[in-house]
Amino acid sequence: MSATVHLEAIARQGGDAAFPFSVPAIRTLKQLALDGPVTFFVGENGSGKSTLLEGIAAAARLPAVGSAEVQQDNTLEAQRRLGNALRLSWAKRTTRGFFLRAEDLFGFAKRLARLRAELILEKLEAAQQYNASGRSDGALGLKLGPLHASIAEMEKRYGAELDANSHGESFLKLFQSRFVPGGLYLLDEPEAPLSPQSQLALLAMIGDMVSQDAQFIIATHSPLLLAFPNAQIYTFDRLPVQAVAYEDLDHVRITRDFLNAPHRYLNQILQKGPGPEQRGQVKG
Image 1 (tube, rainbow, N blue to C red):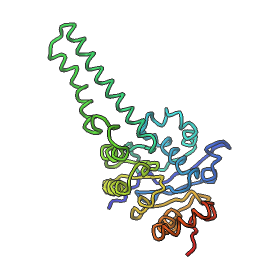
Image 2: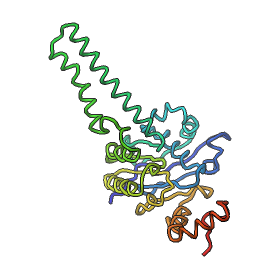
Image 3: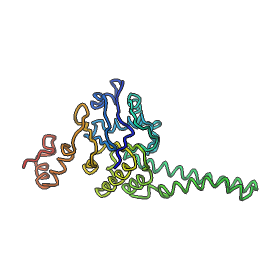
Image 4: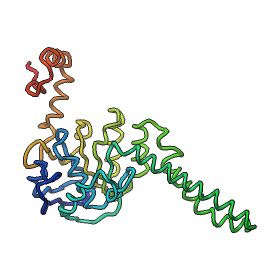
């Protein structure tokens, strides 16, 4: 398997006391080395893993799969400030790839639908104008050719209606159509709409793309995704952010222990309540 790394390291230089620099993981961040083609960010909600991923997307100026690009998205203003404070060290700068937040897929589907509708409307208006002016069929064909091609290419990549599929199916279809060799892919909790079987399908896609010089940085809670062979894992639950082995992750330990004794886990949780001191500490 190829081990191409495009983005080798991330360093923070500067920042202020406001969000997102007030997040402990961001405030204490100096540098993260990206030593392999697959890196995972893991941590509790609010730990800063998604915030850093968004900052990297802003700094790398990757296209976004969403309703707006990173540079225009009003919800990412703070993350753009973080991006301005990040220094990215490239082994091989790539312009391929994209940034995806799980919750943005619906917005991306609407964006595609709007673009498709605009192209169809442009076709109709062009046909009316050319017919009204008595232009030849050949001239009309030259005008409509690029529009036909754009619509056909969009439907080939995404289908006529991306949002007609289930959320999980749409995700996998999107990945199948947008993953290309040599890209850098920043994925924020891509497991959210995916069943366990679909997560395994995503793992297979990631493995295939890694063999074609792609690089992935993924923020996730999924023990399935985190099991990708030889992946680098950074935990945001320790300060400063640090590398951790798969077997040492709370996500993995708690999931494994629960599956080994679900009734015992549930009995203790339901009897004592899900206080933080009980989580993941079911006694033998």
